[in-house]
Length: 254
Image (cartoon, rainbow, N blue to C red; front, side, top):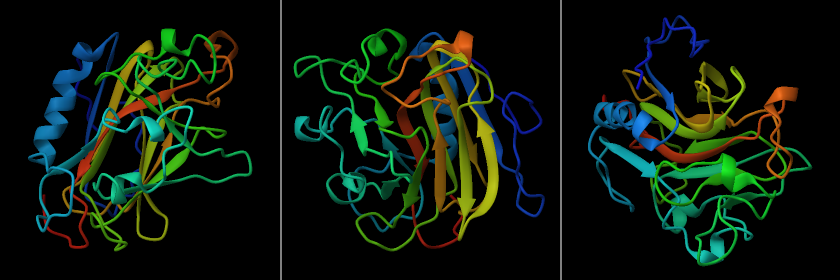
């Protein structure tokens, strides 16, 4: 377990000087136990977990662990991009760009088919461990995508104090990251997940105020459905849990 702050080179920050300095959490290891203390520290910093659904509370945190996504929205079927703001309301909407983008997928349960995206490339299950059993998340056709925040259950843009993600199979340094944005594209910082080949990595960032409106996630440098080949510079990465502050349209401290 490792708790990493802004001065540490493993997690490089491009945070703008005009913004309050964030607190950065990072850890990597072979399994969930190796990163759990740091994930729990990030959860505690954000505040109590709010259950799915609209809430008038501007404090606390939301989480997405994918495991309750029903079969009809699990691989090989696509997940609706607004599933976590309409079906299971948590104030998060996904998007991606490019002609090659083929939607989002959540891996399926053992009873329903190949697990951990073995349906997209044979052998994926052997390189993608899970943090919370047993489903994972990926974009298809591109290895980067956006998470936009909404006041849960509405189309009103929301802001959060922080965001963290668990990555599976980060085998190459400085390839898997989260980029945090404010408003119309103002970059608050880019933060890299530490390396853990065939293991789990966590990176989380928390600001003093609610200022994050969008997160761009870059898992690895190769798209799902291709061979993971770190020795030749190709790393296929997927994600597990997302953890973030309660989305709201105010600037209240969390």
